[in-house]
Amino acid sequence: MIKHIILLLALLLARPGFALLTPVVDSIPMKDGRKLAADIYIPSGMSQGPVILIQTPYNRLLYRFGLPIGIGNDINASNFIVVVVDWRGFYGSKKAAYPGSPDRGTDGYWVVEWISSQSWSNGKVGTWGPSALGKVQYQTAQKNPPHLTCICPLVAGPQSDYDEYFPNGALRTEYVDQLDALGFGITPTLMAHPYYDATWTFAENLNFYPDSIRVPAFMIGGWYDHNIEVMLPFFSALQIRSPLSVRDKHRLLMGPWVHGGHGTAQVGTSVQGQLNYPNSANTNDSMAMLFFDFYLRGISNGWDASPKITYYQMGENLWKQCPSWPPGGTRDVVFYLHADGSMDHEKPGSAKDSLTFTYDPGDPSPTVGGPTLRPDMDQGPYDQKPLVESRNDILVFTSETLSENAVLKGKVRVLLKVSSDKVDTDFAIRLTDVYPDGKSMLVNDGIMRMRFRNGFTQAQVAMMVPGTVYDCEIELPNTSMTFLAGHKIRLDITSSNYPRFNRNMNNGGEMYPGNSIDSLLNPLVARNTVHMHAARMSSVTIPLEGYSSAVPAVQASNMFSVYPNPARDALFIVRDKDIAGTARISDVNGRIVMERLLDEKIECLDISTLPAGVYMIGLKTDYMIQSVKFVRD
Image (tube, rainbow, N blue to C red):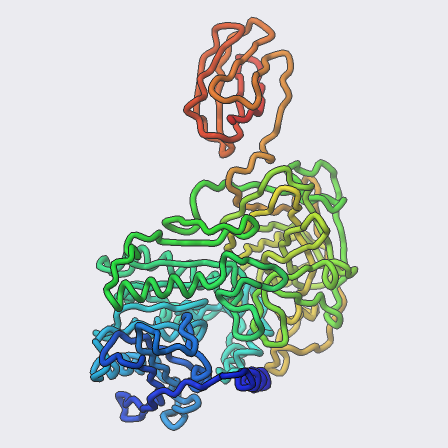
């Protein structure tokens, strides 16, 4: 990490005409008398103004090479004073350290109130920053400093919960590696609590406080970030539980972005992994400035009337809005897995289909992209075909080529019926978007450590009986992704995704021998099986919007037919037999939108009020039901 920073600084200094920013350097006294180092950037000619505060553990001096939110080196064109402070115990504030864990919220309180008392401050303070710089904003807001006006945390929530570090029981190895490298030193604590216990209950209750956020929050996240399942629940809680005076003022922006921190892909860049989203570039900065202009400068720019949630629909590459997450209008569509490697909407009919693969902990399936953090790893969407799907330790299930867009909004749920010849193993899944040229681009991923299939407390741990079939349920993180017509949907199943997740040694023994987050002690090679037959069906459930392909298209028999199809204002029903019956039209979500008792052999239905889309018309008689699919043009 340090080498990357040194290289970046060298490149910046080598640029023609490059100049360092020269802030006013000060120190801010805390409650205990110790002081935090601060850089203060005041635009030329501004005698007094609103302040954007950044609290960082990553060295405030780096901001002298350029300020965020689009300010860059042109501080004199800014409408805001910017104050950057080193956390207690870090860099310029090292001397302020004391034994134990600092109360960063209280430190933030004193920083905000010190700023408000300075002659150059107009008394309005907002905060900004990603990741750890975002979490400290929630901690500061919880303490309710009187002059804190608003907060803008990026790719961060306030929570510290079990699932953040041990999703479905498997440690996030590379994530913890990087947190330790950054100086947070959390491995000893995690190794002492690999099961869900009272410590985790206490931590989760302590760090979930939407009712304590009394200022407007503008949360910014990314669909390829690892904090999705931290941010979205907290934003939903803010909408329900924060004080009434501020409840309707919170906003959320979700873009097609990674967590950032290293590499060229950051929150707000157009290039993310191997994909490019040009119309997403800098949306985070432009909207953050609107937010700060409204609350810190009192500019009437319409921010108060903006949508609660603005989100990016990947695939279609469009910005959309909704009042809460997930948006309405989706229905669960089930894709069943089949032994020929296909996945479709037909339930398997065979009596014994299954597929088996081998997992060797000494040669694990590699992590390629995704929501990673370590600087030696790629972040974001990457093609899984060359390095993951080309191996022999994987099962690959692919849909037929889509004839229409499959618009995913929310969480994909995977239910596998699995067995193993070992007492413990993992099942790891990757959801991908398969392009017409064969690229298999990662959408998101998940894992289950099978000893935790019944729960995460030590009392709930249960080893597998070799050969016995178990349910393996994995819920993937929220996303907003359109699989375009002409593409395919794919599910990759392995038993590792390393080093993103800790390798299961398959022996049922201690998971982290010697308190090492990445060790192999007496590993065993496992033969793992996924079952997919009539009695034990494995499936993927995807919340899709307006998806009609899962609705069976039953051809007209001798009961009735319809024309024209597609139809605009009128739909004619022709009955081939003189039989009475009731016609019902339903939309793709199964809701009945029209009902008509048929009297004549040829009936005309007025469908002019129906929205354009795909519908089913069903005719029910005393002895038969028939359905036909039609399109309202």
